[in-house]
Image (cartoon, rainbow, N blue to C red):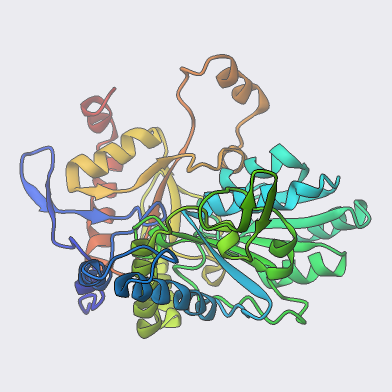
Length: 438
C-alpha cells in the first residue's frame, strides 16, 4: 500500500514512546475524536505571526491594526468554509463547542419563554446538559444500531404541536461515528416551526459542510464546532447563527469590547459578534484555525472523507474476522458513518483493553463513555437497575467501550499493527488479564 502522503503535514508524527518491554516505538494515535495534533503549517503560522502579535480592537499602533484586520477578516474565511451567509449570520469565537452550546442556550433563554427542546439519545453531554438547565427537554429515540429514528422525531414534533422551538442534534456521533441526516432533520424541524442546532464537533473536521441558504428548508440555523479537533489545538471554537437573534439578546459574558456606551446607570451593547466576545480575543487561536481551514481546503474535504472512509472500512472488515470482538453501530452501511469505530473484547474490560494497546504497542485509543453516558447505556443494554447501583455506589466501575478514531494522517500499517495485537490479546486473554489486572 502507498504511504500516507498526509503524514508529513502533522507535528510529532515520528515521536517515539516507551512500551512495556522498554523499547521505543512510534506513537500510533487513534484518539483523534478527542483532539488532534496540529498541522505543521499551523504551528509555523503561529510562530511567523508571533512577531506581529498585538491587541485586537484596542489600539492605533501598526501591530494592533494589523492583528485586528486579520481577526476581522477571519470571520469570512470561517463562514465560507461552512457556507454560512454573513449577510444573515454572525460568526462568534468561543473556546470550544461546549462553550458555544452553553452560550447559545443562555442567550436564547433570556425571554424566559417556555418551550420544548428536542435533543436525541446519542448526544454528547455538551449538547444535552446545557439545555436541561433552561428548558424542558425531550429525546428523540434511536434504533438498535444507535441510529436516529426520524419517525420518532416527526412524531414528537407533531405531539408538541408547535411548542418545539429547537431541535439540537450532533452532526456525527462521537461514539459510533454515525453521520446524522442533518438536512432531513432541518426540513422536519422547519416544517413544524422549529429551528435546528448542529453540534459540529465531529462533523466539521471530516465532512464538507454546507449550512444552506436561509430560504432553503434544509438550512442549518445554528452551528458549533472546535478547532482542536481540526488540527488547530490553540483554544478557539466557533458559534454561527442569525445576526437578528444575537442583536436582540444580551451577551452571555460581559466586559471589555462588548459595549458602545457605559455609565453607572446605563449600558448600550455593541453589535454582534463583538458583543459576545468579551475580553482580549484569542488571536493566536484564530490564526491557527484559519491556517487549518486553508490547509483542509487545499487538501479537499471530499478527498479526506474518502481516505478516512477507506481506513474505516478496512479496519471494520478486519475486526470482523477476530473472534470475541464486539462492534457497535451500523457496520455495513459505511456511507453513513465517519472514521470512528467503537468495540469491546468479550471477557475483557474496556479499561484493560485500552491499557494493553498502549503498553504493548504504543497505540492510543479512548475508552469509557466519551461524555455520552445515556447513549453508551443504550448501546450496551445497561439495565436501569445496573445504573441505579452506580448512582448509589460511585466506586463501582462504569461499563464502557473502546473507541478507535482516525485522522487524515493515519494509515494502513498502523491499522495492521492494531489488528495484530488485538488477535494476540484475544488468543491470550487470560495472560493479559493477569498482567494488567488493577
